[in-house]
Image (cartoon, rainbow, N blue to C red; front, side, top):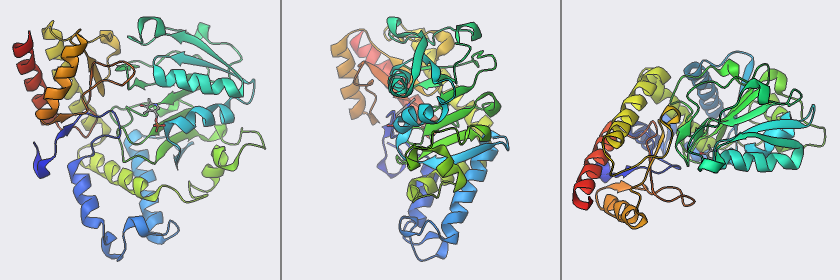
Length: 363
Ligand SMILES: *Cc1c(COP(=O)(O)O)cnc(C)c1O
């Protein structure tokens, strides 16, 4: 147990938020900075909220070094709506797009894209249960594909693109829902990056979209107004009411990451946390981690004992020890420790201690 009687929550999302951010939000809850109102109650057109919004955009720009020719949007609809918005807005020149299927989320995105044009899976690791990032080269991409789509961190299977794929001169689109702000990225290598916030940034309800400006305005005329990136880009995400409260918390998380030294410092902590856990997993044959070493995720660490009943026992006993939501995704079972930015290092230490004890008792 940590402060406030909080447990270590290894949920894949919604997931933990940094305690200093929660404290700040608590302190501001009834009366935000002397305004006499809560951010929950505030007009999104008020100067106070516009300030919250502008600061959030600027801080995200600073954190990720986002070049000037990219727009930052805060939308609703989660990662899932982006599965549709990406092809509706970008599969509009040759009506073709190539998908790299490295896990369930990429598979869902590819399936959705088929509704809007010729979406083709050009590489997949499904036949080995997504235990690695599928290999592909620029030659595998169709010359007239409007974009290439990847899921940067595979939340369910625990794999991650640990190097930039070679897509030649093709537009690269990435779902970074479960890894954004855990590593420095070269935004200029991507045409569009999006991330649902509830994994690594904020409570559910807000989705970050980072889009290169020349890609705005490519959607057909009859695109529903909310689903056109141009609608949001033209109005700085204020075409309609944005998800105000989630956006405000995201802004506080950005400030918090800045205060500890930015994404580089955050990444060092993430590397250390995940390193400890993988080192332990590699040191024992009691637990197995199916993911190919080079493709391991720093955010979602997947492991099994190899015995389904023992996995269940692990999850149940973990809960008694203040370790919650350590079960794997309902589609694959086993265990998954989601150790996003907000998981304290002590949480990982506590988990490893528990795993050692469980190993001794059940070997
Ligand atoms: C969780 C997740 C999604 C789906 O997000 P929703 O906000 O629930 O729609 C999509 N992609 C990835 C990589 C995810 O982890």
